[in-house]
Amino acid sequence: MSSTQPSAFASFSLNGQDLTKSAINSVRVALGISGAVALIIGVIIVFWPRTAAVGLTVLIAISLLISGIAYLSIGIFARGIRGGARGLDIAFGILLIIGAIVAFANLTGTTQFLAVFIGILVGIAWIVEGAMTFAQLGDAPSRGWSVFFGILSIVAGIVLLLSPLWGIVVLFILAGLGLIVLGIVQIVRAITFGRGVATPAA
Image 1 (cartoon, one colour):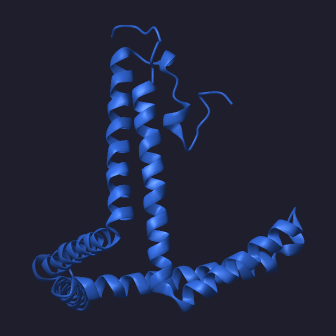
Image 2: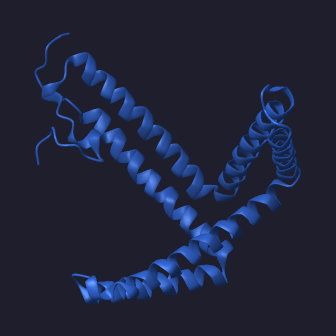
């Protein structure tokens, strides 16, 4: 594969010989920072999943509060908006602010609710995906793998629906492990990128 071909893993397809020394240093810094951030977040998720989940809930609550204030401000102060739309903006803004206040008032309960809600959504999505796999079985290039994937997806979806909180915790920790691996790989890539390559000084 040519290094100029677009890739989802652009940082791995970069060739140091095509870059100046300053560009290589910039890539190293970018890879190092992104790797360190991913590693730190992954470690927090794996070793302190409850704290990480509550922290994520806090971010969601802050986002709701900011959005609510924005919609409320638009509804009250924006000109050229008709009465119905203005009323909807105000009502939606108030609902978002109330949601943020409720979330801040009971972070643990909100975190558990969000975990169960997301777990149920993921479980339903997996069951639907498995059913679609069986529905398209005639077009599949490998019927055996398609049947295996369909059964696995449906079973995993049912398990997640039966215990959404436990299931989403497992997925959350697996995501943390993935971030740890990604972070280590990015840091190693930052250290080794462009090493031993003769490049222009500018």
